[in-house]
Length: 338
Image 1 (cartoon, one colour):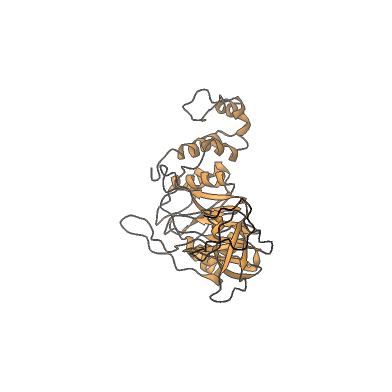
Image 2 (cartoon, rainbow, N blue to C red):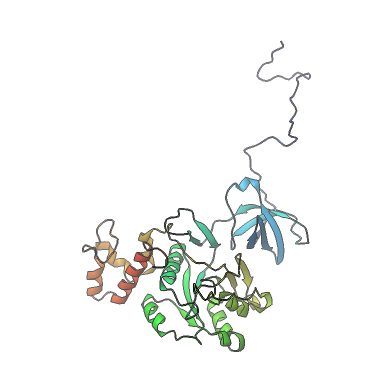
């Protein structure tokens, strides 16, 4: 039997062929200096539609990215055929760090996070004033998710022709959340769509809401060139709407004034991923008062050592703001539908 040293240089050494016919594995990842940046517009069964230099390009995720998934709003680096022609397929090789992330879990006991939208500036929480009835706990949960993910919340109240907004606005005015009230007739025949667009100017805004609240009708009014399927009817028995939007989709506002991200209707918004200690950052008038709180203070009204009561009593903040903070913190522990 012939033996060779560690560095043989003989011509007659036999090299075992690669039976799979593929290239040997390597730990060296390609740099792809020629990759172009794009924005993910929608994701459908492993195919990602991206906007690259004004062209719509369909791409798939490169194997070297592993389990890391790209979502709507992500900035990605793409190589391959970037012509955008029919039946072409490019490849996403990098996902840029995200500025903001809107996440949710199926419920408060589910540890699996679902990233809904990346790099959005604003979260429009769409709520009907009637048919279906407003669900304040759902609004609270969306507010917590917005604050935790770095998004600015915007409350959009629809169907004002069916019920007045006063009671709901009274509950959320202390939070300082901007809002707008619309009706279907104003969206179709009035100036409501333009008033909403003014609040979205220069921003990427994700729209969330229960099925049947008029979210898709609102998006259709904002972006008439890319109308989505009409909102489904509300179930007479459950009082809930039927899903008509099945995947998140980013749409440009007319005149390149911003972006709207329409998301599927949700029936729950779990907050398992949210650390309650971060919610206080959304209340700059209350946050300084926490410096005198004991370590690990939950700021609950039943915790006598919490310094926020004294902070408010001394006139540093409105008592309604403290009530709002505690309501949002309690939302983290509640099950959806309470």
